[in-house]
Amino acid sequence: MTEEIRLATLADAPAILDLTLRAYAPIRELGLSFPAATADLGKVENNIRRQRTYVLLVDGSIVSTVSISLPEWVRQVIEYPFELPFIWWFATDPEYGGKGIGGRLLDRVEELACRELNSDAVTLSTSTRHPWLVDMYKRRGYETVKETDKGEQGISVIMRKAINLGHTESEKEGEH
Image (cartoon, rainbow, N blue to C red; front, side, top):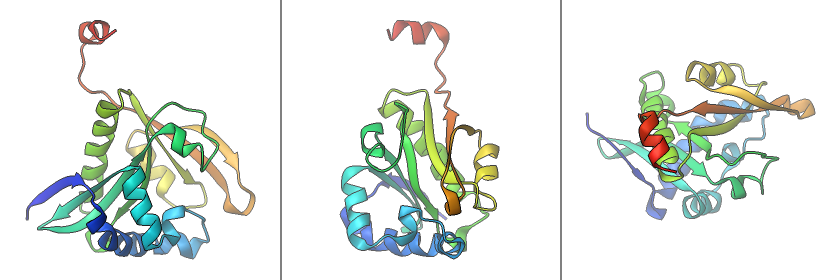
């Protein structure tokens, strides 16, 4: 089994759409309004054009995807008071669930986002109505930094994770 992580291209959009809709089926069943849950080909293509969208391939097939958004773009979609990279549209093929594949992609993209955008943390948003996402992200080192009551949609939480890129204190001081 060979794995590869790379930036998505527009040619990947149909496979990303298929993967995302299958992965987000439980979100739709919960009645949550996550943008990826009701994506169409145009939205996926737009996401690839505007964000840094990564894919993880296993033996040449896309099995996981995640996008990194810049703060100024996130603010067009949600109330977002941070200057940090924002992770969204994270999905792993349900057939590969529980194998650590999505976690490996997320680990790598968290690090890439911080390196590329000169940040020491990343953020994401989810809903407390989802039965396990908040706990999963907490296990991955995320902490809730903002909550917004969305009525029937539950509590929307923005979570933050500090990313240690392995810099020593003297290296950090030398960067200023």
